[in-house]
Amino acid sequence: MIEKNFVFEPKHTVNLTDGSICWQSPSNIALVKYWGKTEPQIPKNSSISFTLTNCHTTTTLHYSPKKIPSRSFDFKVFFEGEEKNSFRPKIESFFNRILDYVPFITDFSFRIETENSFPHSSGIASSASGMSALALCLMSLQKRMDPHLSEADLLQKASFLARLGSGSAARSLEGPLVVWGQHPDVIGSSDLFGIRYPGEIHEVFGTFHDTILLVDKGVKQVSSTVGHNLMVDHPFAEARFDQAQNNMSRLMPILKTGDLDGFIDIVEKEALSLHAMMMTSDPYFILMKPNTLEIIERIWAFRKSSKCHICFTLDAGANVHVLFPHKDKELVDEFIRTELASFCENNQFISDHAGSGAKSASS
Ligand code: DP6
Image (cartoon, rainbow, N blue to C red):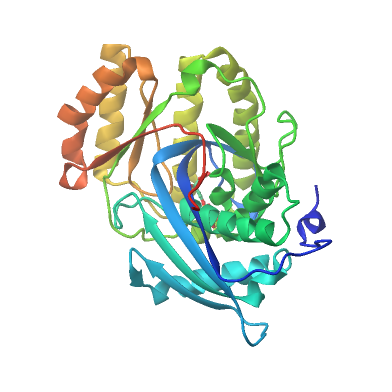
């Protein structure tokens, strides 16, 4: 599949009147991390993530054909009921990036209404869920114009568009595990879009839990985009990209057999390697907070004493994602409540688990 396959070239198009489309799309948490990219949003290594369930964005796209044609974008954006002009630049640059593939977006006036299931300032990035929900709405609009588009093609192109908005958003459409980025061992994998992990998945990973400990709910000092750019000329970049590709190869048999010790080893190594890249870039930065480390040490001590298969991962922030299989839920829930919650801002955490991906919510 190459980029030009995604250009909208319908044989016959249906003329649309006013309407609306709604999608609910989840967040995801990477096991093998994407950190480093080239234009246009091409990852330097493959990544794989659990699709989440409870942390999601719901986006409604109201559309009406423009009365006077123009080549400019015409949209208003509302977040949780209030017009949000601060979201406009991000959407405008997303529209510019995807225009070649969905040229019809300049034929409509849009009202984009969006809301998150997770608290606004939680430190949880909403770009994956938000960009994937918007991409899906645009693809449903394409399908209304060209009803021959298959569901599989709709999802694939939505992932392709979502990637152009935010790389990790390419992994939020399906579940429970999605790979984005070409890898020789993952059949069908591509730098252009995410695919549902095609290998065998042991049942233990179908019901995995992720409790997100909200250590720092503030806005990050360094955005992901800036962080990715610091991988250019990073002294350890090539070794890191090789490590990620190797970790993907190592993870595949583990996902098949349900080897939880092997899983823990790779997932924690990936989280710490990601943060090691941040700490060794120029300029260097640290996104972990003292409580992030306190939590990690307590997870290690609890794992040793309880024999639960609990581990942690981190995204580009201070929050800790606590991953564990369903069999350990009771013990780990109790451990989080009694020992870890006090290291979170206002004792806050969010219980989530692996899920099946985005859902259409159009009536
Ligand atoms: C650390 O997808 O947020 O969460 O493509 O610039 O929007 P952009 O970056 P983004 O980066 C995510 C980085 C990460 C790792 C991951 O999710 O794989």
